[in-house]
Length: 382
Ligand SMILES: *Cc1c(COP(=O)(O)O)cnc(C)c1O
Image (cartoon, rainbow, N blue to C red; front, side, top):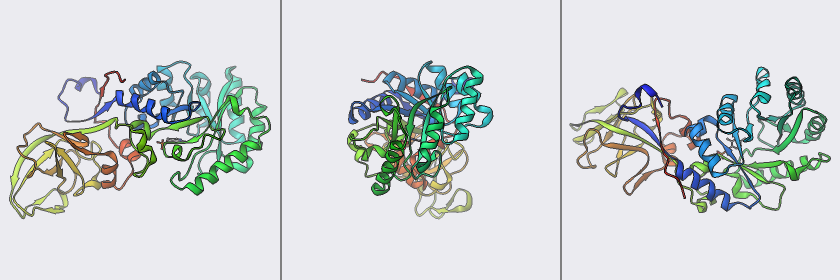
């Protein structure tokens, strides 16, 4: 990551298995109806996996479209692949409009004001700008309120410098079957109100990773937006998608910096929140919240050392974390410690780690800091 430091030994790093990413895309595709197009969601540095490397591999694996949040992310994808459609999922600031034409990007449109702005940007640039019309069916975030879809659509259809390339909505609670089917119903009703909308030749999409559990092929939906699942992480523990057998792409590792023994009754770390109940061997790990081990996992998380689960003792600090290695055998300075991932037969999943941190895998992945180099395994997948 950091060229001046790239030859130094790793202290805390993330391993990204790009071959697993590619296999995951193929497995997800194979589990969907054949006509479904694959929108790869790679916002937030591809969920912390590293945007250029991830997007390049997903292009190789045959993603149909990329979805990002910001212009900077869009420019990174555009740099990799001219001609690849790139959809911006977030609203644009007025002074960003001109980059739609300059970088050949697809904007999300939610209102008549945005239609007018993007039309003006296309006119000034002398180019036609692609847009996806978003319909708010219950998320309460972007999109035109579903009952007003037709007015925005008609305005858009009359804009000579805009081309409708897709329509979509977003589920607020894909785990709630009843509300999700109501959102699908509102979406279809909104589309039915748009006279002449060419559904066969545009992207029609609603489903994120969790949504595809309840997708039916008897609808006009012809694309899915996959973020979390392509990284081998299920959207919730009982997900039907476990049948798809995706594999984790991301592991988070550090190393033991010091080993020592302390007597029973001694207290550990800031605030003295842990008292040793027995004479204890501890290891000091070379990673803390400055790397993305949240302070919330203090006294809760475990790490794998020599294939054994070792509990975190006391508060996580900025650069170091203390673990109990009494039961882990002959631990030495320099040994690897797995924060998320596999070691021998043992595994700590990102879901388990996120529970200790009282958060969700999406946020855990976004919380790995830029001090942590991403190390890529680039063996071609099968
Ligand atoms: C982030 C995002 C997705 C991807 O969601 P996952 O649950 O990670 O699959 C899909 N659609 C929109 C609009 C998003 O913002």
